[in-house]
Image (tube, rainbow, N blue to C red; front, side, top):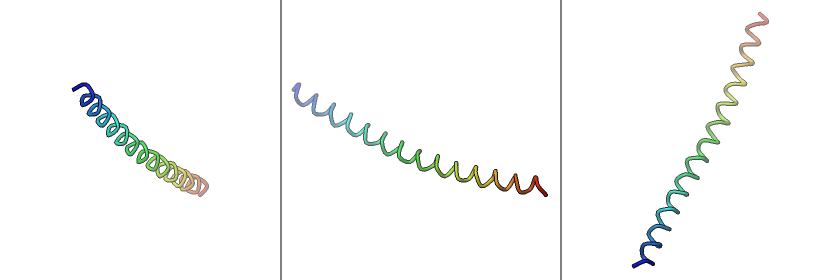
Length: 51
């Protein structure tokens, strides 16, 4: 009975860790995209400011 409980807990914790890793991996990509977009906007604003 105890072994079954630990097995179920281990599976649940493992799934939570995998889900969290997938979420964090997605966030990293979105942060990179936002940084690129910010740099593009910054360049456009500098260009507009010089005109």
